[in-house]
Image (cartoon, rainbow, N blue to C red):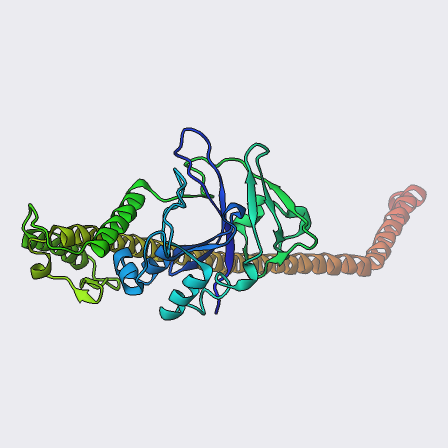
Length: 379
């Protein structure tokens, strides 16, 4: 499946005077960004094939020698621009497509290497702090269309504006801490220039030259460092330790007392070591992300379990309260029923008591009147 594209700005933020911005499309292959330079001043697009070599686990010298590439004839490094932000092996799209096809990466890079992008260009105007494009990304809404939106959005479709129309987006020069800034470090740039220079000298003048350092010492030191680095990390796919230049494998004998080959071999091995360090860093980052994800899942499971326990506890408490309320209601019902029966009983026996009271009162009254009228002879 073709890799999606993303807009990027190549910019050197380490210069004392703000420099030019170089817009590009990016596709990430095995976490290695590969760029398609679309700056209008170059009149054509260029691909960072050095990044493609790195993604395919090639050193620059191995890639250059495998495809017979020559500086200024087949590729550019910095386009003769001082302080160019991303020195690399820049090839035309047609040449890069052939190399990608040979490396079986043409399907993944189909969008990045598409001919349909050849008419798309972007220009920078630092005086106005803006970029001017003759293309647009349809997936970004018009109200949110901006440089930030372009930098943050992955897309699979780019549309050319008709009738020489242009669209402008504002941009500020990024700082060294800005995540949108893309540039190579000094060590990466120096190592690339070193390999290109060593390869060109070796290609142009491959003559034996007695060196100051014995070749087996250089070989053992760099090969030992490389193998030690590999042995310290057995969790990743390791780079191949063999070295080939022009289909010839380099070894102790070929670099012995040959300064030209030594100068070619040293930066190549340094590139292998740096690539191995990059793989270790990526593996460590993946492991940290995996551990963090596992930790988050553990926390979520714990929270879910606690929530379930709280829900069960709340349900039990609710049931206990309902039972208590039901008991209270039952007692109140019994008390009301007992009071009601007592009242009914009182109402039922009250007439009899009134009759008894009347007879007793009548008897007492008769006794008193008889006593008064008949005197002592009443009884």
